[in-house]
Length: 225
Image (cartoon, rainbow, N blue to C red; front, side):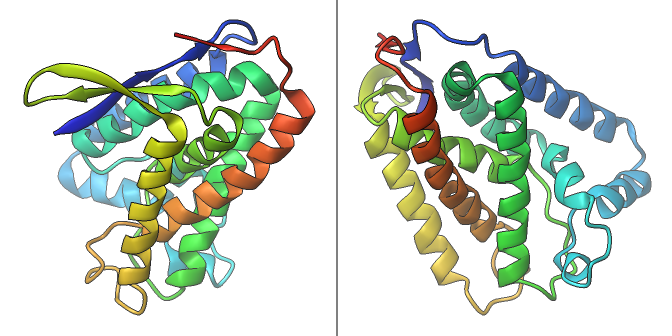
């Protein structure tokens, strides 16, 4: 199996304060979830997860933000945090702390809304940071297409590098194919994965990435191997 484990970091820029803070908040919230009794944990997700059927009627709109920090399992959490760890720091380094916070939250919002548009009658709570992180990845492919993503081939414990545009491009094609494949299906039949949140977040990140690249990037921001 293949796993991304790192990337080329830029040599200068703002420290990734909020990238790591979001990382820590996600862990803290999930640990809190695990301390709740089973019924209370389910109620917590129902209360703070984004339920498309409610959002589409203008109810509990704040859950579009709170849901970004909830996760359903340790593997769900670890998978999201791995991508946040790898890709977010370079974005924050370029655009700065305040803009990164706004961008991250807006990415989660747009991802949630994309899923609501596709499944407006679904009563299943959408949770997870993947939509916001997809926005980060969308911006990354525009701003750092030639940055190298370090991959671990677990079978042989070997490491190799591929360009970010290849890795992220393949990832997006997989999400798009999966999203198109579940159109018209219920959330249960779609496997419980909010594919269109990933697609919507990534698309938002792409458009944001062009703005960030043209507005904030200079020659002094060079990825270091």
